[in-house]
Image 1 (cartoon, rainbow, N blue to C red):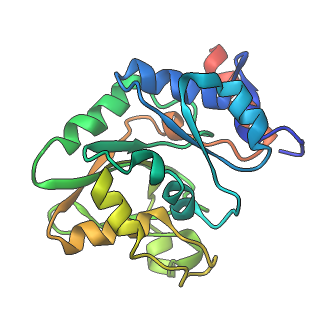
Image 2: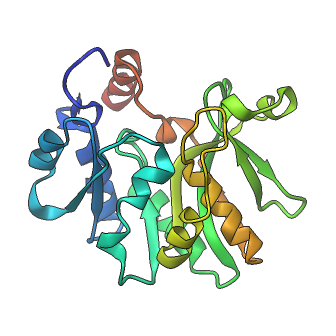
Image 3: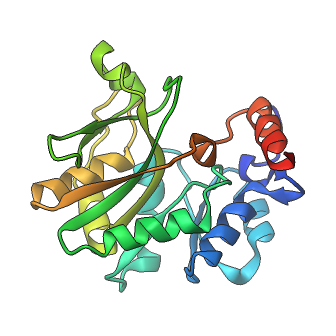
Length: 226
């Protein structure tokens, strides 16, 4: 972002990116929220105030590592947990509700929000099984040429049972191209326990757009203003 300001605090339509996410989650009916903070985390903590619980990620070791930091805050919780990204600001409350409702199916162990994009470069690819459920998510840097041709991608938004999530995270490693703990690797634990991983696909991929540059921010600003 070429700025000392944490990415999630950059304003979109007059409001920090993370506040869009928190407001939409709250409107979806989810009142208890845990925010994982890292770079310039004190600024983020001050911005979100005391309406959420903040936990620190002192080392940046990947998405799975980030979620691991929330374990102590959720240690006594045994229901479903929505995992969302602070830099993906346009996911609607109705979409969050649809994920939670899909996860209510007893045969479903987790749900992943996906989207179909023209250029999937950089995204984790969604590999479905013959029944249309998730087989695996392959990160771009780890993907073969054939896998990279898939244009259904991961938005980084999930619903897990809390205990399954942390049990799954306890079984992942950094054996990948980036040397990080990937959150999607926790889904394998769920599949190994013979539970299905369901997929919900956005009708409009703009809703799942993340912010990685000032150009991305300007693009979403133009979308909101239209």
